[in-house]
Length: 435
Image 1 (cartoon, rainbow, N blue to C red):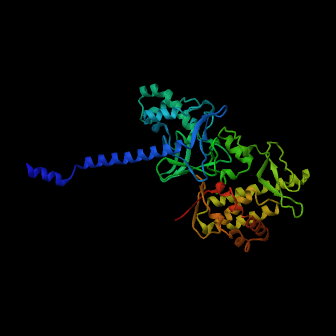
Image 2: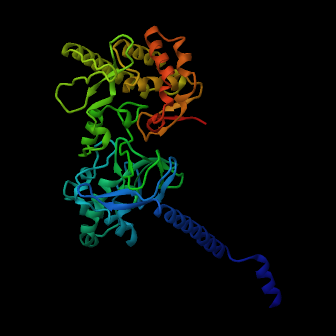
Image 3: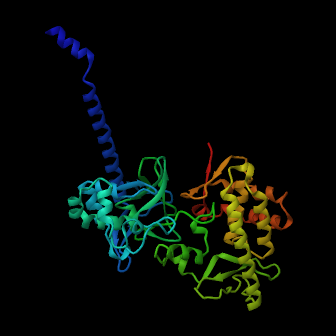
C-alpha cells in the first residue's frame, strides 16, 4: 500500500488537475490586471450626460500627452465582414446588460460602417423584419427562443450598429464594441487616439495632447479614406462632412466650425508676402477665398475662380495617382515620378505648402524615397509612422526633382512641415513597413 502511494506521488498530479489550476491561475492574473487598469482609469475620466449628444467622456484630472486614458477589452468582437448575430446569441448576462446600457435613441440612426455602407439593415432589414429568421439560421436560437429573445437582440444589434469600432489586431481586421471606449464622441481635432494592445479585442486609449480637467475626450471615428496613405483628419472640411454624412452624422467640433478651411490654402500673390488665402468652409454653393491672413489681400472673383479650377483639376489627378498607389507592391514600383509631377503642378497652381494635397504628396515623396521596404494598404485601418519626418528628406529630394516640385520641397524643408507640433498626431498613413 505504501509503495502504491509513493508511486502516485512521484508520478505527479493528474494532467487534468494541472490544466485546471493553470487555467485558473491565468484567469486570476488577467482579472487582476483588468481591475488594476480600471482602478487607474477611474481616476482619469468620468461619463456624463449632455443635453443634445447623449453621453460624453470627460477628463476628471489632468492627463499628460501620451498618457494612458483607458485599456479595455471588447464586450463583443467579430471579424470584419462577419455577421454579429451568432456572437450576440452567445453573450453572457453581464455583457448583455452592459451593451444595453449603451442604448441611446438619438444615436441609433447612425451606422459606424467603415465605408458608410453594409450596415446591419442590409442583413436584417430596416426594422428587423428578417431578424428572427437570421437568429434561427445561425444555429444559436430555436424558433421559439428567437421569438422570446427578439426584443433584446434587436436592441443589442442596433447598439452594435451605431457604436462598433474597427481596427487591426494580430487576428486581422476586427469589429468590436466596448462599454467605455464606445462612448467616446467624434471630433475632427481629437485629443485621444485608440491603439491595439496586441491582445485580442483590446484597445488602449492614449491622450495625443495634454487634457485639462473638465475637457471632453474625443476620438476620430473614420479610419479609412478613398486616397491611400492619407488619413481622414487631413481631408478638407467639405470632404470630411461628406464622409460623415454617409454615417448620418454631422460634426460640430471646433475645427468644423471655423469659417476658413486651413487644409485648402493658396500662396498670397503679393510679392514677399508669407501669408496664404484659405477657402471658406461656410457651406456656400460657390466657394470663395478668405482674405490673406498676413497682408489682407482680397482676390477678384475671376482670380478665385481660376485658382479653384486648378485645384479641382489637381484633385482629379490625385484619384489617378491613387489607383497607381493601390497597385503598388513595394518601393521598387512606387510611383515616385508621378508624385513629383503632381507636386510640381500643385506648386505652379499656387498651392500653399499647407494645402492638404501638398501635405499628402510630400508624405508620399518621403515614404517612396525611403530605402526601407513597405507594403501599401489600399484599404485598412490607418497606422501611424514617423517615417516622413526624417531630417533632410525634402532637401535631398529637391536636388533631383523637377524645378517646380523642387521649390515646394525646399519650402517644406524650411518649414519643417512634418515635424511641426501637431503634425505627428494627424500623420496616419495607410502603410505597413516590413520588419
